Image 1 (cartoon, helix red, strand yellow):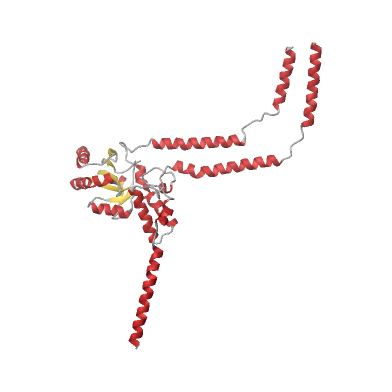
Image 2 (cartoon, rainbow over the protein chains, first blue to last red):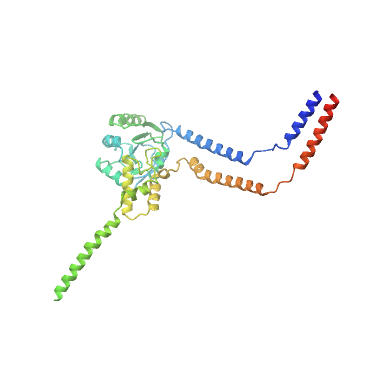
Amino acid sequence: MSDVIDELEFLQSEEGHDEKRAGLSPGSIVLLIGIVAVAAVFGVMLARQNQTQPESGAAPNFSLTTFDGTTYNLADLRGKVIVLNFWASWCGPCRVEAPDLQTTWEKYRDRDVLFLGVAYTDTETGAKAFIAEYSQTYPNGMDLGTRISEAYNIQGVPETFVIDQQGNVAQFFYARVTVDSLSAVIDRLLASG
Amino acid sequence: MKNTWIVVRGLLLACFLLVVLPAAAQNLTITDDDVNAIAKQMYCPVCENIPLDVCGTAACDQWRGEIRTQLEQGYTEEEIITDFINRFGERVVGTPQDPLLRAVSLVTPWIVGLVMLIVVVLNFTRWRKPRPVTTAPASITDDVYRDRLEADLKTRR
């Protein structure tokens, strides 16, 4: 009887043999490519979400052309304390901190300190009106192509980075700055530096 | 008489200008629809995935004002969008900022389209190709196996 069963199994295996095909079907290949592409997109998005503003280490280099036509390169500003402020004329908290920034600038402008204002996704008309309204005298310019804000991974405005004399990020302010908070950092850097 | 004729001509010219100039000015009037037709192709600079034409933030309001100004200055739709991209980056038209994501988003549709085309062509050629007749040999094989099976069963009995 077992011989018969063996024979039957032999028949079954032979019958099914012709229907099997080697390799993936075109549909499976398309599906696999789709899955890999979606996984890659989500992977990059996840990695990007984890990127935050630099709070220490070398400050990303940038080039800012101000409204008066002067171009500042961070790499050329070694030896100075740089206060890099991102703002916009449509931003409420930026209006609150604007007088404090100007006051602090006037306090330190004769020392090795440079304030740079970066207008984020702002119109030139709006930005210039803002500067005139708050009588800002430190250099300000547009973030053309949002290159500087992308390099610093800013999440909104206002955000301020204080960069030390060696070009490292010494302090990051996520919210608006005040004369006291900014002065404390600048004094510390000037004393050490 | 000559002076009267000059005055009449002056009055006619004044009337012509009074009629023509407001009409010309009306043609330059930019409506909200004109602005929104361009704004809907862009995205809010501060919100996530909110088109510019429906966004209520001050930033969007300012951008729409900028579009209106540029339309009044005679810029075309394409020129305005290009100018915004130059000033604020490709994020304004929804293109991802990350270089890799940007590349993936631009290339993937073409790759998928190409693969789909290849699959369709392969299936079409397979469908058109006449298949060899395989029914007769199969039935012969079946008979041989059936005979062998019955013979085996008979010997067992």
